[in-house]
Length: 115
Image (cartoon, rainbow, N blue to C red; front, side, top):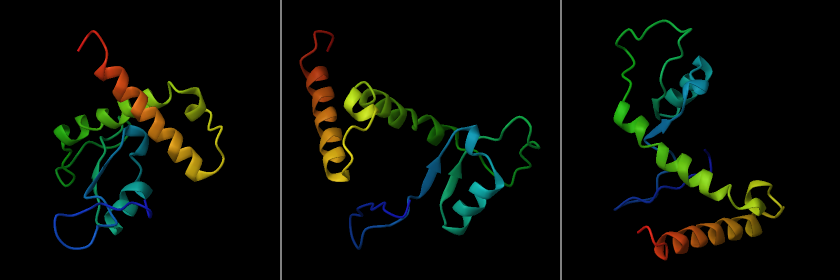
């Protein structure tokens, strides 16, 4: 989270996202407190073993559903064995392989018969 840089239309880039979406596995007080301390809105559903929502924490369903885009992108990248097993040890080389994986995915979509 400390390396995030979000460009803004004007002014310096933000270092923190406005919200963080996670599944029920991240529904812990420690995670929610960390997000609150850093002024990041938590979009995390409550686990079934936690007490029901008392109205203080609003769960944004539409923002939570948008996280599927990131999960699908991660799934596409893991189709590339070299990325999934992280053959590249240097971060620069690994980032280059991610770029190549995204280019491959884009070309596959661009030249597919289904589109």
